[in-house]
Image: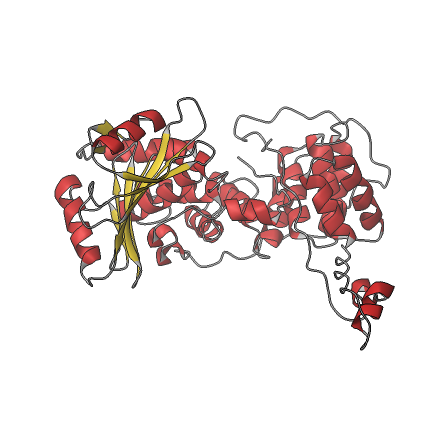
Length: 449
């Protein structure tokens, strides 16, 4: 599936960080296993469409070898930091008269609060987009695009591509992506490459698509790195090269790009372009599953089925099929003391000493629904004793067998299929055991309370 490069804001980036993820989530072996492939050669870059793009260009049906484009709505574009110095109007804004008076010696009265900092046009557009006001965002981006801002050009392309605040218009989307690509904006280059590869509003040209993906990928854009990896894997526009595909997937995976994590995990599982490595495959698929990738969840379950283990049952409850009501009842039955049980929060918190000797806290977090399904349980142990982490690992190994994967000395992971068990060690603070249900876990991260 070729990825649409979507604008992001700080909130969406925060959601990309896995909640309470064990230290093994981003292991050192994410480093590419193949050298950086040479850049894709091409002649002069293709010209952008005319300044008055055609309206309502029909989208041709993609051949079976191509995956459909991403249709998820983009998140708000990044708001650039407000600069300081002579170019920042806020730095030279006159002091309000009340504040001047209050600041003078011998005057009375409370000082007025400082004036809020002025927002840049792109920050204003980002805020408008985040609250769903696509029209206001478009107006600002049109003004900024007229001044040559490549990011604004790309964002306009996204609006027309997805029909947000405007009628979907492939021609105008293509126009703005091409303009942004011409300005060297990485997301614009990748999105323009996607249009070329899919033949949307322009003749399909996988060779040129690969070149634009390559340019954006070398700027560090994870979506472009994944897209280029896919072309190398399929041999579209470039020579088929599984090692090069794995190298680009690896670079995208280092940035927690979900599709790349899943694809690279599969390659390690089957030994495609890399040496087969079940432990690496497990960690990569685990990271993708925790991001909500359904294919990665299925592969974890297939791998677990090949090596049966004990079921994830706690206090008589199968963790992959229990819910908030049932868990509350059984936790109280076994003596857990509630610290917080409140349906307005996704997590209930308990004192856990009576349930798990040595543990001091248990958090039970749930996904949406009625009854709310369990997303994960976390048991925290104080790390007062230096061998606490090893004792926890031994306890889990006795129950579930040898770990499926690990990173460092103290982080381990057991793949049970529908449930993943992981340990996390924070030196001098705590050792945690997490029981995670991937199909629900990623839904709990929308509101980490």
